[in-house]
Image (cartoon, rainbow over all chains, first blue to last red; front, side, top):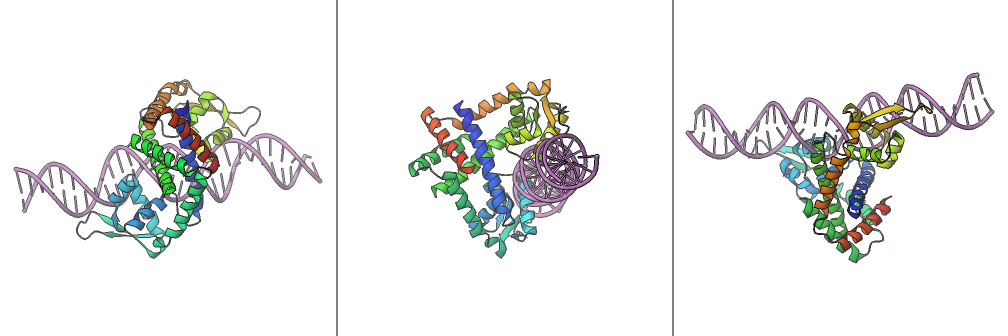
Length: 138
Length: 138
DNA sequence: CATTGTTTATTAGCAAGCTAATTATATCAA
DNA sequence: TTGATATAATTAGCTTGCTAATAAACAATG
């Protein structure tokens, strides 16, 4: 019964979070998920699409489509690798780099909202339990 | 930093859960999310699509599409309401009713996996914190 | 009773994410 | 060097989920 509720709550929280992000990101001309891809590039440019797949834990076609969309918006650019003609590397444009701050702001705002009224000790415990759950699934 | 991790963990857990469900439900010829719609009908048949929207917290076109898909698979049927010609009510077929047990089994299995190694007291606390988060977002 | 507004559902069209199938390049082995 | 195999990316086609626009039935108001 409790377990059932936890599963349902997880579902409710994550889908609401997704909706909220979707709405907030729209003002930056981003779709939900694209912020995650950009985030990887902010910490390491020139990643191959396969590397992005691994980091984002999604399938190659998803990355192909997202990169294509981000490229047409002028946030990233693609270049064929010199050494290996199969791989294409993804780079940020200036416009893409400039999104870092506004996106980080959205993240912070949403995090604060999510964790309101939860004490620091509770947050530590919550993180531990969620780490456990994440491990259980992988 | 902790808050950031919690947000990331939430994302990781929910997307992994979704993928796992997707895979498990495929064996029943269901897509992820369709189990949720069926679940509402298992507890109350003949719901209107607007009611389903409210329960599932999604938009009308989403329900239209899901019901259409479930109908073409023979899991539900639709009937125009006698009193109000605008509303269409959704009913389970025998085939749809028979899915209850196998789907419930998938849920139980996945819940157990998710919460492995987490003590009963911890589960109680986890539920409380997640309830808080769910409220914070709504 | 006709007009105006509201509610229910649908259609069109988009992106995320998937699987399956395909293309193109590399690599390895005979 | 050729032939088989592996890897990177793409395309096609699907469902979920969304928004915007539309259709259809009902309600209310003059």
